[in-house]
Structure formats: C-alpha cells, structure tokens
Amino acid sequence: MKYDNGLTSILINNKNSMTASAIAFVRVGAVNESPSQAGLSHFVEHLLFKGSKNYPGYAFSKNVENFGGEINAATSKEFTMYYINMQKDFVEESLKMLADIIQNPLFPEDEINKERKVVIEEIQRHMDNPDSVLYEKFYKSIYKKSPLKNSIIGKAEVIANVTHKEIYEYYKLHYVPEKIIIVVSGSFDNDKTEKIIENTFGKFKSQPIPEEPILKEGTHAGEHIIEYGKIEVGYMLSGFLASDIDAQDVYVADLASDILGGGKSARLYKSLYEKKHLVYAIDSTFSVEKGAGNMYITSVFEPKNLESIKEEIERQIEKIVNNGISEEELNRSKLLLKTDWQFSNETPYDIADKVGHWSLMGNSNFVPNYLDKLKFLTCQDVIKFFKRYYCKDKISHVSLLPK
Image (cartoon, rainbow, N blue to C red; front, side, top):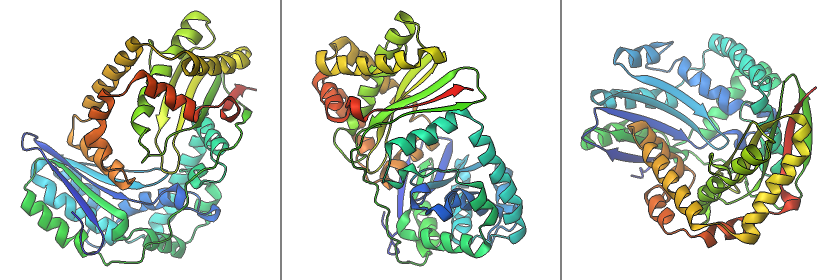
C-alpha cells in the first residue's frame, strides 16, 4: 500500500503462523556516502537503538525483550533495515516502537561517543579478517565508477570525528517516507495492522527525496591484485560484472553460478579440488546489485597454486561457453535452487526480508516469479549468460597471500 507521504507498506498474512516479523527498510547505505561520510549509514543504524522520544535510553530493547521479541538491524551497500521478530500478539506494539525510533531518534551525545568506540573496534576487526579484506579489494577492482565500491563498514577516522550535527543532517536527509518500506509477515489482524501503520509511519512528514546515486558501471579491464597478510594459506576472489537486478537474465544468474561452483557436483569443485588438488575449498556466488551485479568465485589454497587456479577457473568458464552444459547439470542445479528457495521462505522473517529487499531494490516481481522462471530456463540460457558477461580480459583476481 502506498501512503500519501510516499511510504510503502507490504502485508503478508499467514494465519497458521504463531509468530510475526516487522521490518523497516530504508533506502540508504554505503552508495549514498561521500568519502567524508564513509560508514555514516552504519553508524546511524547503531545510534537509532540508543533512544527515541517515547522510548528513551534502553527502553526500546527492554520492551522488546519483555514480550519475548528479538530486535536487530543491518546496513548494506544500498539499504539499512531494522526488524523485530515477535509472538503474533505483539505486532501492533512492535510497529509503534519501530516507527518511533525511525521518526524520533534522540542521538544522545554521550551515546554517540560510546558508540564511536564500538564501531571503530568493528572496523578494526573487519580489516583483520581475510574475507573482509578480500571483499573490499574485490569491489574496488570491479566497480571503478559506481559507488558500489564504497565500504559498508566505513573509515575509523570518519567515525572518530563526525559531529552530532553531521549525523543528524545525514539522518534527516535520507530517512524520508518515500525511501521507506514497511513489511509485516506472519499472523496478524490486517485491519488493525494497516491502521497502526497509517497512524505511525503514515504520519511521517513528507520531505524532498535526495538525489539518488548513479550505480551504472561501464566495462573495463579486470585486475590481478595480490595483497599480503598474517595468514597461513592463500585466499582469492575472482569475478566479473554480471546482471542488473531488474534485467531479465537475473533469473538465470543463480543457476549459472550454481552450475559453475555451487557445491561438490559443480564444475569448479570437481576440477580444482577432486581432480587437480589445487584448492582446499572453492565455490561461486551471484551477488545481485542495482546498476550491475557480479559473479565471484571464492577459493582457499596453497600460495604456490595461485596462477594454476586462475587459469583453471577461466578454462572452466570457457568450457561452458564453448561446449555447453548437460541436461543433468541443469536439472540438478534447478532442484538445488528450488530447495534452497523453499527453505529460505520458512519463517515470517525470511519472507519479509526477501519481499522487502526485492521491492526496495525496484524488482518486486522477482519473488513471486522466481520458481516459474527457474522451471523454464534451458542449457542455452546458461551459455548465453556466460557469453554475455564473461570475458577473460574483464575478470578480476584479487588474492591475499601469507607474508
């Protein structure tokens, strides 16, 4: 439902459920930040739990715990989300609380200073993690122009020095009704829930929408980057730009990724692990984004095998392009993806998260269409996907090796 102030709500009712989930998605993340704001979306996410007009201090979290609920939040490249999982009798109260922390945060000065230390510690831990270091370097390698290259966790110097005024101005700029989607899933009374949303989120004052970042990424050459750290084995992310979130071939992206490296029956595992013994572990993932997603391959290995692994990854993709895939591979991957999809819709939170994410990203048809689209995909669709997006000159290999 679309409200006069621009806010959107989505209600997904399941009377058989004993629980419910309420999620507030806000379309602001790392892509909205300038270099001097690096990490501010994530910092604001932390601070919204530190007190609001009607729930000062820790009253919000205590209230949720008192009715057996669970709260959390997360920041991504393109959005921030806040959620409460609860017993079905507490949906209305949960929505009132979510509305208050999003509309009326206090940003207490003492809490800002406490939380600076917490977030700076998170940043330091992040940069000590090999997977995190690789992820940051990889995104900067494949996204040269797009702000998708921005780090979600941000920079310690920004968090250490950002003022109360700058935090509040950033919040006011982006936390506007037009950029918010409220999703409620599980068992609840539709009429009461709609009324609560209308009287809380629906009363947010409409404001101008800030200019949206340009996420399109032009084609460019891949990079071979080697970093060194205090680790025992080698780690590598190899990948290339792929389908946009609203492109038709976003439906085949997961299938292509699974056939290439989605488990022990996939091509990369069979070749690099079972046959050639070049890696300890390897898999591939399609990461959906606005502007342009990416397909990346994660490998763990002995450093001496680095160049052989790069060559074999490229050779396996080229084999799909030149020789195709079998019906057996296609059907195996379809069945696995169907099972994963069904398991990912088990709880009210899972459903709300998936529907809200795709709606906020501008492709609300993806979720209801996914299984039907998957059913009719062919071997030729997978081949066309790799032909369209893969090129040896455009693949990046970003590795982290022991000093």
